[in-house]
Image (cartoon, rainbow, N blue to C red; front, side, top):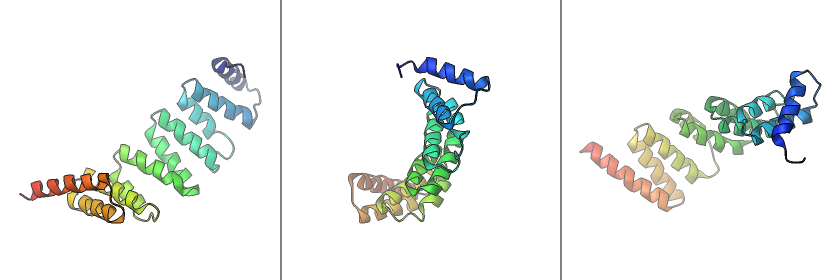
Length: 170
């Protein structure tokens, strides 16, 4: 409470190591303090050990964010997967991370049944197809996105992919 996060981390972690019984609230505070002092991996581990850590959407969200901050991509992906099962809005966090980590086929699988934001879905699929070298499919998706809601981004993708398509057929 007096702004000494490092001291608080030391105290709580020492208590835990010495088997002092800490409440779920104390353990969650320890996780948040770890994050505050720049130890996101420890924060994620602490959150993952809380009761309901695998079913509470808020705890899943926190874990995923901490794993991402720690650059533990596979762990973040796994937790975003779990979180997205409880709240579909987290599917986009998962998709973004999958794109970043070059899991393009998984992105295509996840986006094929999304009904909301069809132009965003189409542009995401266009990017995934492009990264896989499937230019014609990427162009098809970019054109679909542009038909749904034209934008400068979709227009640029269409121009870029059209040029690539022409260059590969020549």
